[in-house]
Length: 375
Image 1: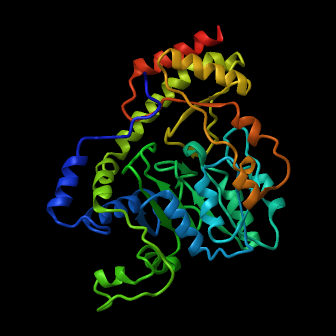
Image 2: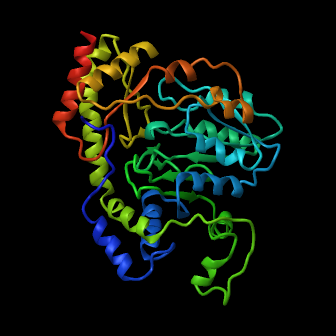
Image 3: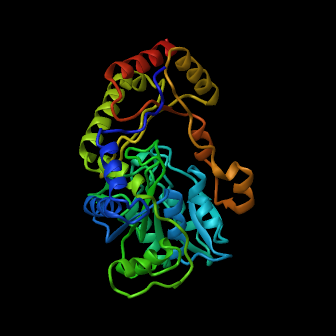
C-alpha cells in the first residue's frame, strides 16, 4: 500500500534530540526552540514567532490577543478543521461561516462584507492546501470595518501571497507542525505576531500568564502572574526534531513541488477531457505542495474511486466535512448567505498521497490507477 502520508524525516532529528537530552534542558524555550523561532522569523519576515504545542494553541493565543469575548462574531470558511472555530468558540464567540471559492477552496472574499455585523471582531482566512487567500481584499475589508485578520496558515509554511509569506500578512498567523504537515514535530505549531504591540502580551499568555520570558532574559529579577494564559510551550525534544527539518526547508519544499508537478502532468489529459478537475494556483500565489487533490463528478464517484485506489494499493482520502453541517457548527455558528460551493465542492474533493520522499513510481501507480478507473 502506498500510504497517504509519511511524516517527514531528514536524518538529523535523533542527533538533535540527543543534544537536547545531554544539555539537560528538555522543557520549553531552550536553545532548540529559540533556533526554530529565529529560523521561522527569517523565513517569514514576521516581527516575532513563538513555537506552540499545536496550531490549535496558536489559534487560541490569537483569540486571546484579539480580545475575543462572549457575544463577538468571527468570520471564517466552513471548509476548515475544527480548531479554526474552536479557538474562538472557547472565548464565547459566534462563528459566522462564509462560502468558499470553488477554484481554491479558500474563503470567498466577495462574500465577507455582507457577513459583517456590529458584533464582528475578526476575519479568519484559511489558506487551504497552502494556497493563499485573496489577502489584499480581505485586509482592505478588515481595515474599512476596523477588524483584525487572523491567518490560519496551518498548511502554509513556505507558501506566499504576492511575495509575502502566508501567516505574515494579517495581525497574527498560525502554523501547524503536526505529523501530516510539510515540516513536523509530531504535534506542534507556531504563532506569528506581525505587530510589536502584541509581542509582550503573547509571551505572557504563552508562559501561563507570567512574565517568565522577561525573567529568563534578565529583564526582571523574578517573575510573577501578570495576565491570563496557559501552557503553550512545546518541549525542547519537539523543537529539536523540528529544527532538523526547518534547516532543510528548501530541500523538502522542492521535493514536494516535484511530486505535485508530476501528478499534475500525469493527470492533465483527464482534466482536459473534463473527467476530473485539478488544483488551481491563482496568479501571485506561490504554494508549498502541501497536498495534491482532484475533484470528481460527485460524492458517489469519489467513493467508488477511493475504493478502486485502495484495491490498487493507493491510500487516498477525502477531507473536511463542512463545519456548518456539524452539530457543534449549528450550535455555535451560522452560515451567512448561500452555501453554493462549500458542501458541493467538499463532496467532490479527493486527496492523493503526498509527502517528502514520495517515489516517482508510486505517483505513476496512483495516476495509472485513476486513468484505469475512468476508462
